[in-house]
Length: 266
Image (cartoon, rainbow, N blue to C red; front, side, top):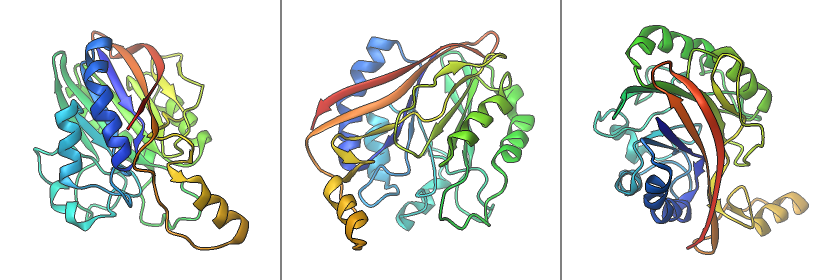
């Protein structure tokens, strides 16, 4: 089974890149499942149902979340809508809207998707449960239902956490991927017990920026300690970063993991 995981989709320009590139990628790569990281996919971070439906219409099957998932209260009710396949990190408190895992229907059976959040610098994380313990509990309860495989997205700052996550879940999930830092890492690999892993899938957003924000704004803030509103370009060159994971559904182990980087102009 072929699974494409798309790195953090940034604002309107990132969504347009997915809409433009994904239909051909589905055919070219023979994709069975497409997952996208969703927390930055609207201007100013967060989600709207319009943005989610745009990418579902383009071929995205499900979405993982992160620290910006709750940025737009207008989306809160949709987190609990079973027809909207959007996750928020599972280790947020139960009083937060939404869910942190789901079972996707695929041509090969059920596929378990789990979203968790790791460490973020400079953030109050006192409300978060432990990401690994949280995912362990989900796997214990539902891994037997995942006849086609499983994937965990750990959304966090530290590459050390994301590497450690892969080893912790090795042999128990098909893939353990990292998101949040927006820079695709070159450490994709199959771990000893058959789990595909990468520290960060990267960003689907505008080139020539600092993690999706206009570089002039970031440099001005850094050089002059001047507060400025973050802005993302609305046009220009943009790159879709993703990983392609090939899973043996008979065993749930990964056969391969390959980095994807496709550029276009919006």
